Image (cartoon, rainbow, N blue to C red; front, side):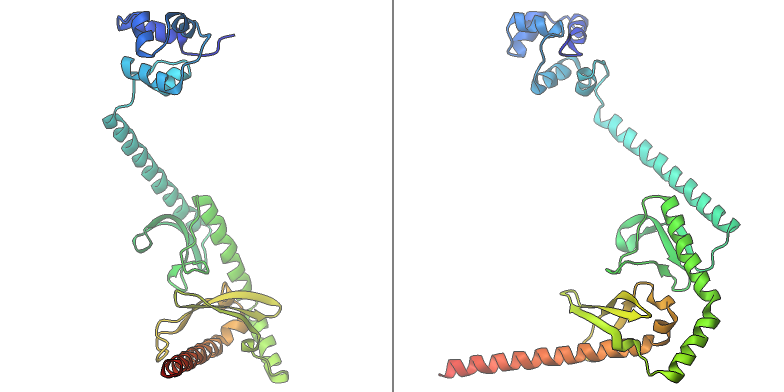
Length: 284
């Protein structure tokens, strides 16, 4: 059984380029018997020896290794192929984008739309779900647009979100009625169920909020803790769709803003105490 697929090809290439077996053996640092075994398919060449052969005969090393003779891809050819591939990808994307538009025109969406976008601010392009109500892409908890690998995945995600939104919108009157009855009979506030407060180093306060048994993750931006003018809720998952949270959105924001101010004040106090202690130690 042959141990390589390229022995006969090397012999053929030698003949084409008028290179003797002994000369090639010397170049590859092999003895004549071993070179003969290689050409008979009985002995394998090392990776570097195959590279040398491909350079000498100006053929593709990978093709040679797999029993084929193909010219090596030059840089210009490679760039041409890459450009052609990118052009084909662009045509495919445009075609899929057109199909997305066509599909969503046939089955109109109410709020969420799948689309291809080149988001220059984020240096990414691909398929996303666009929220017509918020005039922005659906984002994750880190405030980055959620990207989908294919148009199909984006379309399916948009449909799920839109169905959820339609369902909750249809039940809005019933839900609002339930909330009014709850407000009349029970003193209830979503802000009472804000938990898991955690600050990060990028100026965000992470938290969870519970409503009717659902615990939703949220993100509160802290840009200007001195006066609070730029503090705002970035997201509460899909909490804005839940009527209980939607109704008390302002209360939640005020609660978090107050929490941040108290947190900053506490930090300042601790800092001042620490500095005072250090000064006292220095004086001693």
